[in-house]
Image 1 (cartoon, helix red, strand yellow):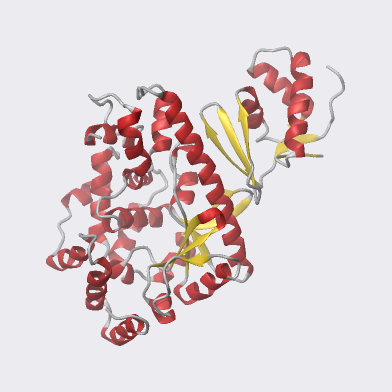
Image 2 (cartoon, chains in turn red, purple):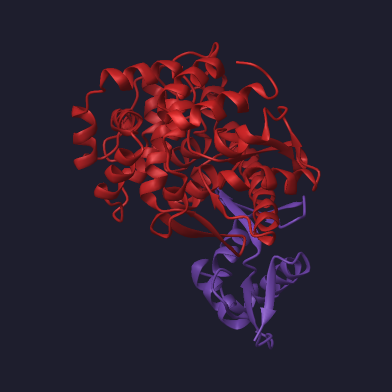
Length: 333
Length: 93
């Protein structure tokens, strides 16, 4: 699929999104890529609005209906997990897909997601995983060590109801950038809001924290970010209740200006409206230290090892022995 | 139009749903079945997001579809009965 056609779909409805693409949308050639980039909902909405011509509209409608059935399953699973954790006083925040589906964009049906993401406090992460494991969830990878999970891991991934995937996050990014996040910020009342899903008021982030998270996910997650994730950043940038000062304060406090800037630049290219934040991101230049840290996110091969070494460099000296001990309790670096 | 129940009718909050084109997909929590409402039934679902008596619901759908409310009342009542049986809609004061 050409970048232009994909950008046309991903930027649909954004203030500066590509208005048209030279190439027509052919289902047999392009739909799988759109599904992979989590843009099925956007493509369907654009097609229904008459803004994108598709050669097999029924195939797109079917794909969208399947995706909606899947997100309903995931929200059902999410609510069961959320209520199970809250019942034992584990503090939880709903993050990423389901939360963003309800908070940004024109309609939740435009946002497709493929798993459930819940954030818990590090000291409660092992207990949270145990609650779900006692309810038939299964870890997809063996635990490195309880100490690693509690203090250093990004998340624990579980396989649960109907073979769905549920990520219990401790922080917002793997490796060094995740370790520089102050977890108290993630649960501060000023950074919290609620979203009503299935009659339940689910705790989630405020728009500033969602934006920083989305940018970190786009910049530090997959080597090539999904355009659906980049679109989240663009939509969050367009929210009228977004405080640029709060966004910058969060990023500065966590040394996360580089991933924030990279995420915002990607969103600008997709069609985000101009703002003080997009101007800042355009002008931001990474320091040599930032570039060294970023290097461990640049390749799929050996990521865990590279991020472990890079993590050592950003941890305070007093934390380093515990980090090495946590990693070597079960398996070595 | 015959006498319609005076109870308020409204979509249950504890129901998960999404729109897909002119269809609505509904999933009751803890239940694997997806109920699909098409075309006019989807507009019924939209109207059910606000609590109202059956007569008012029928009037609103008649206005939306430019149809005599007396003609559609039995169909609306039947559709609401199905949704109540599926625990997607509640009747109350």
